[in-house]
Image (cartoon, rainbow, N blue to C red; front, side, top):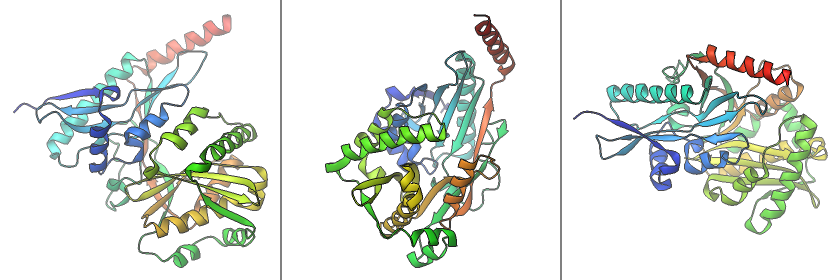
Length: 355
């Protein structure tokens, strides 16, 4: 039978079928799920182009899903890129020959889409917590190789909880972190409940806005955090907060999927930073996840060559909890028409200056 693939846009896919595929695919993790993708649609200047690939020759089953967003890089000129957090997730049961044909099909579609939307590159980032990576010790090259022309891989910090006692986990913390934790006796650790979620959300948004100003970073839409707090599945998140007396010092959100967790997003006030509330929250969160039989907790990308003090401090925080370095596979697919696109960008800049 002649193999024949079709593209099915995200908006035309059934949530149940999409998530069923994600749960079965070893490539897929939280960012591939329907809610994982939909949460990102709340970001400003992000437009959803995610899609699935249907095998028409086999009962129109889904054989791949690809999270994909068009990101507007400038409000002044027409300058955009594609972002694929998670990268293509492919059906595990396909033969190697069929996988190669599927990759070729996906690449052709992406090339066409990039040309049509005048996008100069597509940025891919794989999920290290996906089973195909976290439980595969044989990977020595970037799995994104067939899709990318530029490898930009780095590392992420991950603490392995399975087959360890919590004492062993705590003993792996850096001495400086242990010293900070000894000074947090007056802090209390709380898990978010439905009865106080509105109050915690409002506090989170307020602290996020203050932190954005303090760190000079772009603040995210309130709608994004509202989606996480109220609409994102309860089974796929844990929200913790730390208090000193009646004051909330910090709030942390973790994403959970297939028995693993990731340090998703966090806010804290200046008093919380002085009191070590983020360290206290991570310590208690690891303790909580160990009891829940979570296997791995990812702290996030390490900024090893950064000269920014904020990134250097964040890197130290992530590695201070005894995590190990794991590969964070990423890379860029460069549009073959990039030269023409950059010429158009320069023209638009020139026209803007003249105006």
